[in-house]
Length: 145
Image (cartoon, rainbow, N blue to C red; front, top):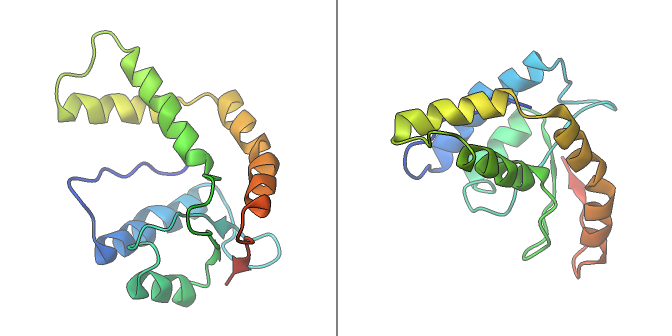
């Protein structure tokens, strides 16, 4: 699991790039992952406009980060959405439930840091199935640089 970033309100393109600079690049270092080359990471994000803005695209190009193209209205292939669902269930099972934003953030950090590796492995292993579904979608998925 990478770094968890606390967001207040709605973020815009420059905020997104700041998060990428701080948390994405730091996560790569933390996990000793390469962002380029044959063994490099392929970054995955959806079609949110701030993700594919000129500011964002320039950042990915300058940092030489490969991104997985995301067809419009495609099935969700990003396992992070399933992680969020499982985190939500873990938070809802807390006793007592978090009563304010600070308690919620603390609970999220704790559950994020202790997210079961077996659950993450299962989600990761499901990726070939999700990619195959995406390839059957009307638009073919391509890897861009």
